[in-house]
Amino acid sequence: MKVNLSEIFYSIQGEGQLIGVPSTFVRFSGCPLRCLWCDTPYTSWKAEENYIDLSNLIDKIDQYKTKYIVITGGEPYLQKQQLIKLCQILKEKKYHITIETAGIIFCSLEIDLLSISPKLSNSIPISTKERHLQEKNRLQLNVLKKMINETDFQLKFVIEYPQDFTEVLYLQRFLGVKGDKIYLMPQAKNQEELQNKQEWVIDLCKEWGYRYSTRLHIDIWGNKRGI
Image 1 (cartoon, rainbow, N blue to C red):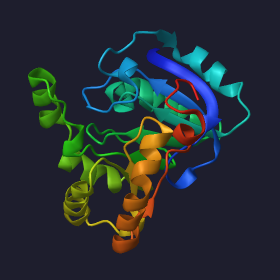
Image 2: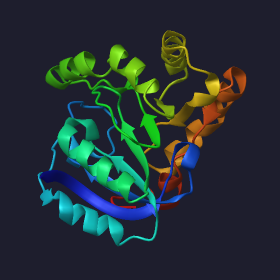
Image 3: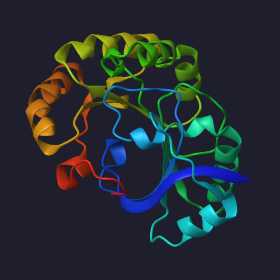
């Protein structure tokens, strides 16, 4: 079985409840979305193809000094069978598994944390073709409901404008989740953007009982690949 793998690297988790934890990142290539601010266009807008045997991928994972694995993308669920098998093997090896997903495709998995980032309207690109694709695919409400009943989860929302909050509130009420499951995270590709938005995003968290997530990797290294 082969996996379309964009990259694998050892770093720290930069977002959400496990922020700062040394982790191995396994980034799948391929995504049905076209987010305007996508920070990994090499997995989506122009998805790379780099197929590797699953056994070789496991060997690479085992070389790193952590039991925390983050399977990300692109959209990992796009490669369902490969994802299922990979998670089975990693659980047998006693790894802690986080999957980062847009919440648009579902399959049942044995994992530890599902990090779901539903895409708000601020993700819709301007060009006609990609705009239609994004509007059609970005929110799959039935999939989100299944996911939050599957395992431990967090909902991470990329915030570009203060008015994005109304969409977050709608989804919270629709899904019936508590505020402490929701992280608001500034849309930022560099330190300046992160700093310019963080204060008013934090104010929203304080007002509504959400959690704030910085993007620690952006704050430290900027928008670089493999960190």
